[in-house]
Length: 536
Image 1 (cartoon, one colour):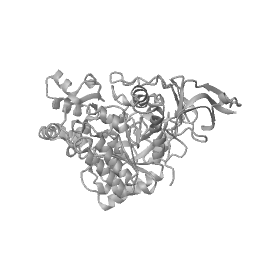
Image 2: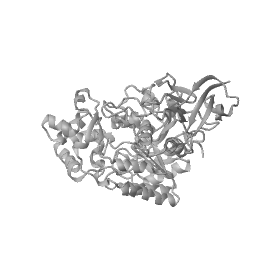
Image 3: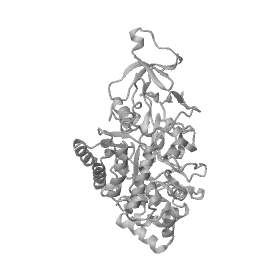
């Protein structure tokens, strides 16, 4: 007798095809059988040790978050309801070119400081790994949901070249290529870049091509946060398409948005660029989150010259009055590359999290509002925050365009990614709400996507990009990573004011055939493991 039969579910199987009614039998972590219209046919219905009545619920594959920042949260928080409660059964971490493997002792400490705003410093984490394989082994000790890993190009560059703005020598490039090869051999699914973050931003296109050639040889893909999402966004997208073409490497565009005032209504131009490349034979996909604000660290807005050398050098520049004045001019007048070539509007920069408790009163205010309370210029408030919070401040950037969001999510290569930063007092609601927001707001309320189409965006499409042969569809023999939701009530509960509110309408989530969400509540099951690259 098998473990579980899910009776009378409306199966939306991830293929994009119309739904059907069926009993779905689960055993030993996989889908054993699917009996369509069992009750109506009057046939012998399957039996199992447990039966779950799914009347009125949709059964779909578990959702795949193609852009997650849970690198430490998976280890820190066994509950991980932020993602499990959304129906996410697999996250892709190692994003934006900065994560925690491969490292040595020096680089690990530097990276921890650089992305404290994303993941916390990690005092509660035992960093007992240095290689990609060792990090994946650590995940295999048991996590709430599955995780795949991208080798972070910025971390690799920090390990070999350092945090300086200079070309890599041939010997250094050879070592970076070897590190990428080792990471792929140990199970990474591809390479990420953060080309507005130090030190990944210092890599020229020729260096990226050489690393992507290695990734392509192992059947992986390149996932860049490219050089601009504001002024010059289309040129930045075109550069990534050219890099991938020259390297012969599949391309997945991270949080593929068109933001800032200069890009209002320009999403069709981006999609036309991608369609031309696709029609010429390129292998391109993308992910987006269904919100208009962005989220990053306050330090990320700084110009690249001010970020050179790592966090310690950045703080030294900020404390020097003359250098700080130069930084201010780049931010407010010129438009720094860290702010995507657009002069910063402090009224759009909302403080979402701080690491220093004494600064907590600023959370939820824009930098301009916080400055008005103190009777000072916005730059003075921002500078003080950067110094006193030691670059750990996270922000929301209210620079998006709803029409761009809607246009891009309908593209033929679109997938879902939360880009969810889980730290901070008021994190972006996308961390807790991305997937139910797609299903509730954009499917049920707006009808922008059909239910079947949207589920395909969140399941089979990302599984195909990750080259997972047994995930992303409800099929016999596939992994039983499944979600049951009510299409009439599923909704994101997370808001800007209450960003950690869990969604509604998702009563059951299974990872490897075991309930991680049951009757709408998190169980103590830790069925997730690392999902490693499928050998070519």
